[in-house]
Length: 217
Image (cartoon, rainbow, N blue to C red):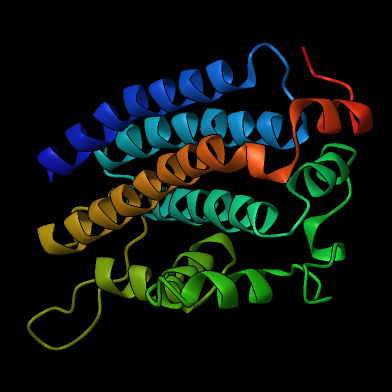
């Protein structure tokens, strides 16, 4: 468990390196998709820090909620990158337009269901992680199961109901699985932004993008 959490902490520095690499590629001019990419890294670094803190202090349930937020980083920037017009879509997002109201190149709105469908083509595990982690965002059967797991039965089979704020009733395997899943998705964040850094010129030259958008810096 601790090795997974240490790997997550190391990933914060990796995020910083990827961010610097993107900034250098931008040569002092940040356009919409660049700005959103850096915001994704910024959010991800905070989520990693929060996840590690919770995982080390008995906070499995809120840590699982952060897993859903980290997956959201991947889904939404993946959608922006594949939209056909990353800067245009990112600009709408910056202006407050919900991504689910924007169509992709096929004409379909980029809802969570659509983004999952696209990402699952190369990452089939995303549907399971999405469903499981979403159960921790909304009040669901997951929380009832945690209550029951926390509440052991006595020798007569009577359940002794208990509520609390620790996760001592969970196995090490459960905690490790959550940490490793968060690690995989967090690595995905840095790789996704790194791929944008490499591909950004294919969506327009600096002059072409500057003609459409004002730099954020």
